[in-house]
Every structure is written in structure tokens, then in C-alpha cells.
Length: 292
Ligand SMILES: O=P(O)(O)O[C@H]1O[C@H](CO)[C@@H](O)[C@H]1O
Ligand SMILES: O=c1cc[nH]c(=O)[nH]1
Image 1 (cartoon, rainbow, N blue to C red):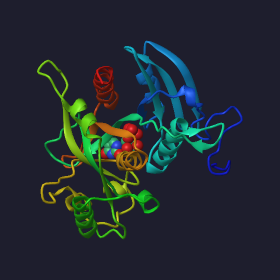
Image 2: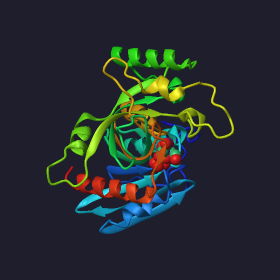
Image 3: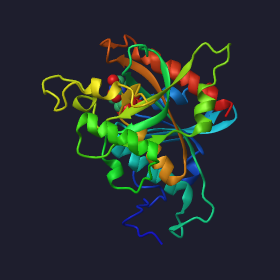
Image 4: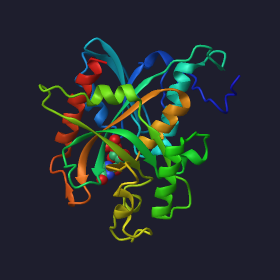
């Protein structure tokens, strides 16, 4: 039995931070950083049955073309992702009455719809990119037992050496079937989704090599991370994907992260209309989800 200090359930039978009761969550979930992106997505639902919020976690659950979907915001960073993933998992895999783990586990399908900056000149602002792999430059996985393949360990070691950080970055892949589904473009598709490898950073400024008033500790950071390591090349950076992929691998949920590229860090460009880029990603994602 999981004590009430470890798994906090509110008096209305909802989980502590998400404020959701088990029946209010769909098995297909879209996650976003920006809370305002939740209604931008749910406005296209045919019906909405649940609207709940607490802190930065806003949830709308409804139907889109016959599929039940929850869209949830997390705010920024992998610390919030850890809370979200643990509580989503508890909603489906822990019996709230007995506080015991269920015998039959449910695997959720979770699709991140986010924004990101490109690390390669040819990945232009406005591109849509699915993260095939993600590298975590945060320390979340110092607190979990995440297994890494030989290849993942080698890439991690090389990034550690190149950047001289004091911890091992972690590397995790997306669900392969979801990558294939979301990157399969027909000739009739007006939008294309490319595949990439995403660096997840614990901040927007120095952790992504930006300098405003404070000089980052790591000189020439972008040059140190964007070059090929064997056949592996990082394509873009943001702040959540690796946390999702690692928690998804640990908990047995299927994950993919889809990114609208808003910045090109090599050509020093930023989108003139970020909302338009995000809207294109939303339309693309909803159409692909309806045929999942
Ligand atoms: O647009 P979202 O989903 O928030 O994602 C990206 O944008 C935020 C930074 O501006 C970070 O959360 C980063 O990961
Ligand atoms: O450069 C960028 C753009 C969006 N989000 C990020 O985290 N970085």
C-alpha cells in the first residue's frame, strides 16, 4: 500500500498536482508547455467533457474525430515533466481505493507538442521536427535507475567530454511506431515532419548557449554540441523532451515529441509569427492522431 505522504490524493479523489480523477484522463494525451496552448488545441475538439486546472497544469479532455484525447500543459522544464508523468501513471496504474499498484498495467500514448530552436543551418525556422532521440543535459536521471545501451553510453560520454559538464547526460529514444506514424508524409500532405535528435536543457539562456547579460560558463557551447558523434547529430534544443522519454521508458508509456522550430541558433533568426508555426504543428498533430 502506497502511503498518503507518497501518493497524495486530494479529498475529491483527484491526484495532488494535476487535480484529475482517474476517469477524467484519456489514454491518448497531448502535452504542451504553454498553458495557453491547451485551449488552442481543444478548440478543435468536437466536444469537451473536462476542464480542470491547478498551478501550470491545465487539462481539457474531449473527443476529436471519434478519439478521446486529453490535452495537458506542464509549464517549462523536466522537473514539471517528472511530476506530470508520475501522476499520469498513478492515475491509470494505481488503484486509488486500495492504494495498490494494479495487476494489469496501462500504457498511455503521450505526444508532446512543443517549440524548439534549431542547431543546424538547414533546419529552417518554421520546420516541424519529430525527436527520434533526446539527450538530457539536466540532472533528473541522477535520481532514477535509467538503463542506457552501449551506444547511448558512448554518445553520453562524448557529449560530457566535449562540454566538460560534471554529470552524465542521458539519452533515450521515442517510441519507434509513433516516430514512423508521425513522420510518414504522403505526397498530398502540405506539411512535412522531419526526424531529429533533440537536446533537452535545464534553462533557456546559458543552458542553451544564450548570452544576455551573464556570460555562459561553457564557451562556444553550440559548436561543442552540434557536430556529429559518429552517425549521431543533435538537431535542436528545448527543455522537456528527454525527461518525457526517460520517464516514458521507466514507466512503460509510449512517447513522442513534436517540435515547431521557432529559432535558428546558427543563422540567428527567430520566427516572426510563432503562433502561426505552433498552429501548423497543432493541425498536423490532430490529423495524425485521428489516424493512430
Ligand atoms: O513551447 P514549449 O512546449 O513550452 O517548449 C519550449 O518553449 C519553452 C521555452 O520558451 C520551453 O518549455 C521549451 O521546451
Ligand atoms: O530556442 C528555443 C526556442 C524555443 N524553445 C526553446 O527552448 N529554445
